[in-house]
Image 1: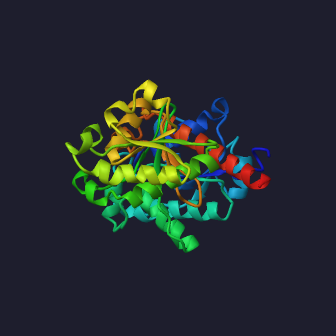
Image 2: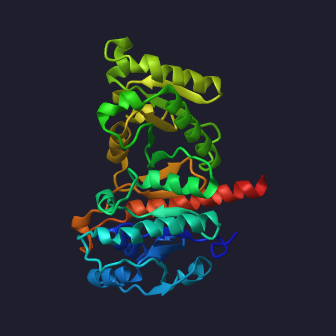
Image 3: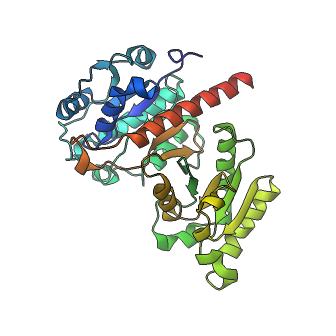
Length: 344
């Protein structure tokens, strides 16, 4: 299958006042040397043009549809319009543009469901900006799960995977206060999260038999109950259920010894019990080139593993490495999934 016959990626603008436009422009400018997979930018073309001027980049922007984006991509940055309500100033977010931000995400998902784009890649959003406009979801991931449920009529459990060159990690509980983790963390949630992770690593990442390492919740995985009962009462039974289902899983393991070089060589993904337990090692080992991939959805979604960085927007100093990794991973996963379907 040639690159031009393969659907482009759908890249959302994220918050237009953040670094999303900057890193998008930087990558397109280096598209040839990077062998960048074609993408269709869904957002405000005026924001891209103004930011290109501010950054001193000569980037032609062209109106496009998914069917024309790949052909346009070598010579112009293809854009499907999703215009902001008010002019955007780099570094100064405005909640009046929330509808355009979320609208770009909705469009990307709809196009991917229609097979007009190959996958969804999302530039960073600022949740606080969206909350001011009435956004009712904890974050990107939960919003995408709701869009999937509306499109299919089936609820999906979105699983956040941080994928870097040295580590893949999954937080079982995500955007909740640490004090609430023991109550939310159930045997069923662990089993369901691990099952989705194992399935997507097989079907989309092409790992024949994924090895899962599950971290304990408490220090030293509870120290036999001396440092907490959850590991023996919740995590260990979940691991036993996974093994009984034929999944290669071990745990609960002390989290403080799971992430050195030798330990990482023994598994394909680490399942961690709370947000920072998964994200701290992921970002320490691959801050600039890790990717946030959402598993458990009926479409492929990746994003850079960083935020909007408003203080860097429009200054030409934002690094595009993570967005580059997100685009490449989305393209690879989409091609692998499509090839698997064609040979099934």
